[in-house]
Amino acid sequence: MSTLEVNNITPQSGSSITIGGSGDTVSLGSGATQSGFGGVNTPLFKVRLANNQNITTGTRTVVAFDSVSFDTGSNWDNTNKRYIPDEAGYYLFFSQVRLADSTDFTDFGLRVRKNGNTTTDSVESNVSSFHFESNYGHVIFYMNGTTDYADVTAYHNKGSDSTISAPYYTWFQGFKLIGS
Image (tube, rainbow, N blue to C red; front, side, top):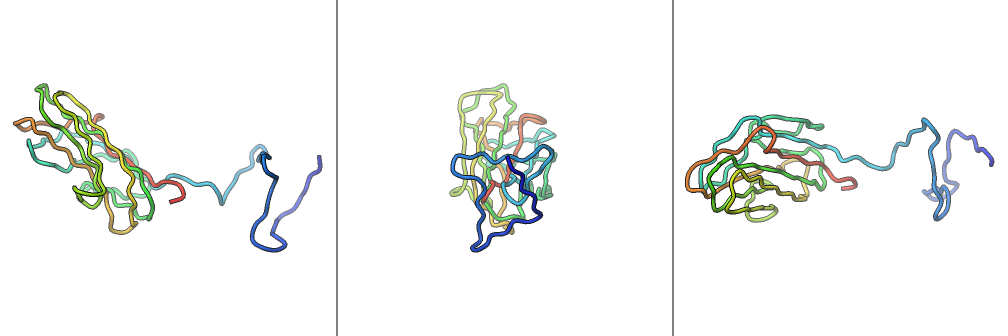
C-alpha cells in the first residue's frame, strides 16, 4: 500500500474529483473529520404544553405551547404560539395533543397548519368515542424562511368544555429536512 501526502487536491480540468471507483469504500482515518458535505436536520425545535389548557367544545383552538425543550434557531414565537423558521426549505412537523377527560366524546382532532390555513396545506387527525385520548399528526411543508409559520390547533365536540393535558402528553416539534 502506498501513501499519498499532499496539502491540497484540485482538479486538473473541470470541477470534479473522483476518489475510489464504483463499489469502493472510502474511509477516514482514526480521529479524522469530514466537512463540506453531508448535512444536518437543523434548525429544529420541540415545545410542549407545561400547563393544562382549557378548550371550548366545538371550537378549534390554537394550542398554547408554553415551554421550549429546545430550539436551535430561536424561531419559536412564544407570543403567538407558532414556529417561524428563518431558513427556506422543506420541514417535517409533528405534534401530539391529549384531551384529559373521563367522559366519552364524539370527536377530537388536532391540525398542524401552515400560515393559519385550515383548508389546505394541513394535516388533520381525528379520533372518536374515547376518553383520555392522545391524537397525533405529522406533515411536510415548504417554508419560505421569512413569513411562513406553523402552528397546531385542537378541537373536540364533547358537549362541554374540556382540558388539554400537560406536561408530557402535548407537544409540537419539527426540523428542516436535509438537502431542502
